[in-house]
Amino acid sequence: MTARTLETAGIATVIIGSALDIVTHCRVPRFLFTDLPLGNSLGRPFDREMQYHTVETGLALIESVDGPCVVISDLRWSDDDSWKLNYMKIDDSNREELRRMGEENRRRRKQQKAQGLRRS
Image (cartoon, rainbow, N blue to C red; front, side):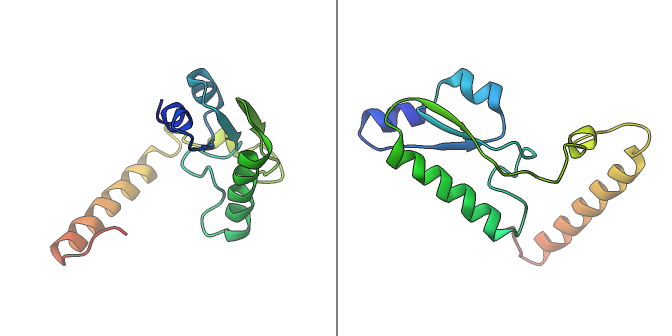
């Protein structure tokens, strides 16, 4: 809805995301779909080249497309789609490891908070 409101005010928008069904249902003015894990729509963490390419592609949509569109990015998370089989998978094979990682993360954040540190 925000994108449509901005577009009505004359401000061009591009939504970059990985949730194709949700975003197309919302009918945003311009959508760059990246078939990457949720939370990583621009690309792999610390992969500036991949992230730059995604932003550059999104900005090019503003110059080249006047009406509603969905463009599918050519970027891939890996050479094959096997990552999709295990992404966000929780079952007996990894439950204990995920629990341990969560506890460690909470412990670290509590310690950082006590030191006056915050996430940047």
